[in-house]
Structures are given as C-alpha cells and as structure tokens.
Image 1 (cartoon, rainbow, N blue to C red):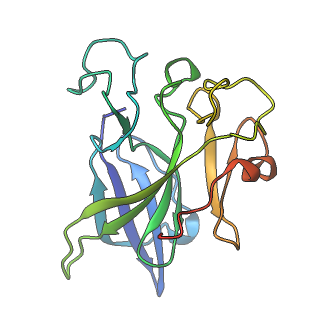
Image 2: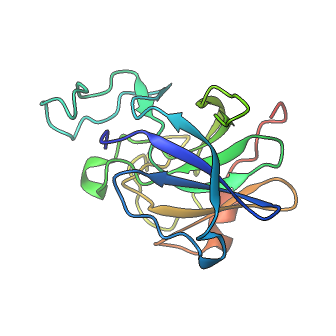
Amino acid sequence: MFETSKIFHRLRRDKARVVIAALLSFDVAVPLAIASGILIGRAVLPATTFAPGPTSGQQLGSAPINGQAVPFVDKQPVQGFSAVADNGDGSFMVMADNGFGAMENSSDFNLQVYRIRPDFKTTQGGSGTIQVETSIELHDPDKKIPFTIANHFSAERVLTGADLDIESLQVAPDDTPVQANRMTTSSSLSSWISRWPTAG
C-alpha cells in the first residue's frame, strides 16, 4: 500500500487542461486525445498521509509494511484513490478505494471522500504539495444496503473496504457526490452518500 506517493499531473494539449492521477508503480492508460499532452505541473501526496479516525490495518499482520508500523493507531490512510473529480475551484474530490486490497483485511478501513487542494509545481512556481481539506465518511444509517456489512449492528453503520469496492465518482447537480461500485448500481448508492459540508 505504501509503495509510492500519489502523483497528480497536470497536462495541457492546445488550450485544454486535463488533470489525471496515477500511481507511479503502475502503467497508466492515457486517453488518445491527450496522449501527446505536455506536463506543465505536478503535486505529490505522500503515501504516509493519514486522517484522524479509528485504528486501521489490524488485519495486516504485525510486521512493518514499507517502513510503516501496523496497525495505524487512531488514524486512517488517505490513499489510495479510485476516482478524482474536479471541483472547478482549484480543489478536487478524491475517493478512497476499497482499503488494503482485499475484503478480508479491510473491515477497519473506513470509506471516505476527501476534498484536496494541489499546489501544482510548474515553471512559474508552486510548492508541488497537496493539502487535504475536508472529508466525508460514508455510512448507511438508514439500512439501504441489502446485505450484511462490517458495522452492521452499529447505529451509524460506517461503510468499509470489506463492504464495497467503490470505483467511480461524479458530482450531481445538487453537489451530492454519487458513487458506483462493483456490487451495486450508482442509482442505489446515491441514497447512501452524504452531502458535502456547507462550509465546503
């Protein structure tokens, strides 16, 4: 999980700018329309970025992973991301993937959507850093999910990587994040997702 930092690349082709996110350890399929794009900036979110939260990684064993001690006491990993949505104001919504790579070890990885703000490093300046601004923790208190989840008998029913493999993120006209995963449809998931805080 901690093999590399998350890199955000800003590409330009003619007058269009496109932001893509990629893990350096994987090959990235770039759409043909921007395959000849020019890198004009980048920002890095360290792999060791955590958010406050309940202890996670308790099913990862006891040996350090890439130098990181496990479990992650009183914190949740912010990475990795399975989707990025441009907010149009310099910030982006990024959606955490399904935890530590398998249902069996991800029941304490709480699914979240983060608002991040990259300061792209370009030839004109910029720090190349990324600030994590806010987050939404996904939960199902109204019991819309028709199967047993990791936090099935809790009041908040926080969703975890053992419950869903969320893969895509779109923003509805009313600013509600709508997600799709491999187990259900996006239309049924939309009723489970909280709105962004009014403060942004």
